[in-house]
Length: 273
Image (cartoon, rainbow, N blue to C red; front, top):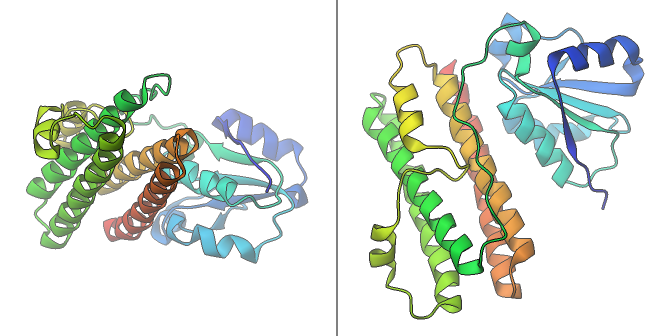
């Protein structure tokens, strides 16, 4: 299986690439929603919303460079990495950093930076941090649910909240095998912080930004997608680092569940339009 590394291109680099590269050497994919594409898109781009990318990508000759873009670079980063993980025979994989906003010279909203997850810690420390991130994400979705006036969306965020708690319990079961003397789940979970999300983003910072009246529905859902993508990446890495086959299978299953969360959120994002 071929392994790909997704490369980020800033707007000026992509413009230079498109000017110098023959059109038969690449495919340019817009992974936003149809109404976004209709308003504005990069000439020559092919519309495939994120929720359809894993199935419709096979409609094309992939023996070319594949370039992905969206509004902010978040959805396209996920799309490009999903294609990379499929191990297909393609050319280079590129993501337009900053999305079409940067392409059009617009200023992208300054979201909190992602902090790296330190895999050099001991296994128990890594697992506790993973539980803490699940707890932070559970709190985040709970806050979104309480602040959402649309009952359907509030129920959706509550559903995601419950999924985060279930993942924390799975992580605890693995931790218990490594450290049998740790407190019971409820006691340990209560003692953990809840201000750090799975992607390393600070809950308080995000909530503060989400109180901004100018924050769009798409901003909220792209942030949720970003959180779930980093969780997907985290558990995929933990599956490689696990010391036993059962733990590896569990983390791999969790990474696929996070991928499922991404699919669900990408479907709900279309409701913004």
